[in-house]
Length: 322
Ligand SMILES: [Mg+2]
Image (cartoon, rainbow, N blue to C red; front, side, top):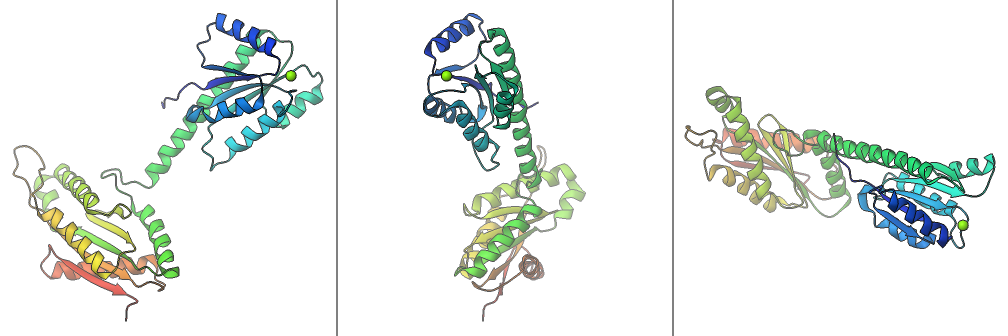
C-alpha cells in the first residue's frame, strides 16, 4: 500500500460571516484537517498552488465578486486533469444558495465533483469533504503506482540500470539528433570476460554480485548525460551523445580500467575475483542516417574483435566517416 499525505481543505466564500462561523464549527468538531479560509478566489488560487503533491479539497462559494466559484473550479480541474501538469489532484465542492436542478447540473458539468445547497448542516459538509479526501487519496495512490510501474518498465531489476527497451528509445532519439545536427554520437558495448566461469564455479549469487558491482563501476565512469544500460546477460551498453572517435575511445578505456583495476568481492570466505571486460565501440558521423540496430551491430563486431585480440581490451568501429 502506498502512503499519501492528507490533502488540505480550502474554503472560499466572500461572505466573511459564513466563513467565520464555519471555521468555528469545524474547529469544534476537531476534524484534524489542514484547513485554509479565503474570502476571494485569487487568494484561494495561490493557496492551491502551494499545496504540493498532496492535493486539495476546494470548498467554494459560487457567487463571488471577481472570479466566481465556477470559474475557479474550471481552472483547477482543467489544470489537474492535464497529464503533463504537476498540479496534483483537486476535489471541488461547490456551495451555493442557488436553487434548482439546472444549477446542480451546471456546477457538475463545469467540473465540480460535488454540490451542496446553502444553508447546509455542517455535518453534511464534513461528510462530503471526507468523500473528497478519500477520492484524493485514491488518485494520489494511483498516480504513485503508475509512476512506479513506468520506472519498472525501463529499469533492469538486478542492477537498477536502464533496460534494453529504454536503450532502444534513447538510441533512436540520439541517432536522430546526430543525423539532423553537427555532433557525432557513439556507443560502447561491454561484455564480461569468461563470465560463465563465475556462475559455473561460484554460483548465480556470486554472478549477480559481479553484475551489480560492474554496473556501479560503469555508472561511475560514465558522463552525466550518458545512458548506462544492462543490454542483456553479461552485456552492458553505454550510449554517449555528442561523443566523437577520441572521446568514445577514452570513455571505453576508462570503463575497461575501472573493472580490471580492483578485484570484486563476491562473498565472505572467498577470494575477491579478478574480472575483466572487453569493449567494442561504434561512433556515427554527424549528419549520417544510421539505424539503432546498425550501430549496435557495429559495436558488437568491434567487441568480437576485442575478444579475439585477447580480451580485457577495446576495439573501435566507425560509421559514416570517410
Ligand atoms: Mg457569495
